[in-house]
Length: 477
Image: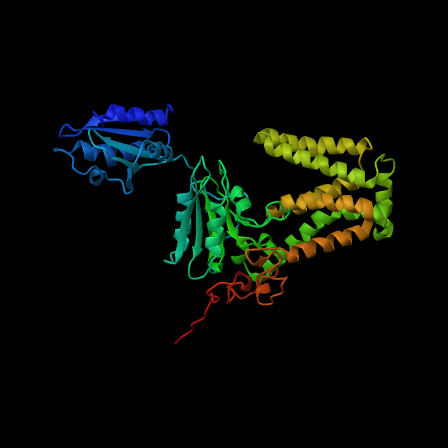
């Protein structure tokens, strides 16, 4: 028979011979034969039984419309066996009826996922504690929970030739700049790659300069931060399988802001932001300034401190720049090893590296005590701005090399070059140094400085949004 169950199941099996794909044959109340083919590891077997098998089994007469009897919310025709194999891989169940040409795909997917919990890298004392998960539907639900506006549009794009990863592009249609969302969707669709396991792949797709030392997209793990940026007029991107969302356009000032800044008094938030900027500058420049002072400008060090340093470095066989570079490399090795090792072994490794190895190296006269202190304090300072650790680590090494070669002059030229580069760079019409280059006094109320007025009256000018007003005090009419 042309449309026999066994023949059609065998055809699907040839397209998808995996062991976790199972088939199930049963009869309806009227004696008609049906078959289901689905992946046992990703499909919800309870939904298969309650929404597909049960309605068909209770049928007492010949079935005229299989699609109408399936109780799943999402049912669609399946035209061929290639499409059937693809839909099974996505978590659908293929419904086949004996003697009928049509096959139907019922969405019963239930992939493994973890519960919503506080993200590990963006912990807040005050404010919401929910974080994104790896499931795109859960993440969209967390956004819909906060933004109930009908103008919130979510467009899905498939990325990855072999994975068909769902990428959700979120924006407010009455706020976002014309053409911005369409441009981002076009950038994603124009790239072909086998697999997209994380949002960092999409970040490379939509960046103007993906190889730049400075990142071009903001990342966040908290729905409240994501929704606030979308309401400002940015476009948010969520990737299935990744708990880290992206928002564009991006400015460097965003990395010095946390969600908690908006839940505490403004002067405290301003102080913390300036503290983060200061800590990042110290973390990047302190090792290079120490080397530069020792080699070129010894008078920069106060006299009493200079005597202490001189007594500590006496007998050290390495030059100041080589000593500092060696200490930084040892720190990076210990940091990488403690992250990759199992949790409890990593803690022991950190103690051994920091106390035993460091203390022994100082006592052996290989490195000096000031070098260990400066490197340790520099590392602590960098982690006050965790979103910039990768960039800051590279900059710290670059500044150290320049300081050991050219001194203060080299540091000044390098700093000027970085500032000029950042001021001239922009993605999607927004400068990386916004609102400071180009200067916008109104937007500086929520830059590094946090104004007492909350929220600010207008959306950032650099975003060029349709609706500029976001706060209005209507008063008593």
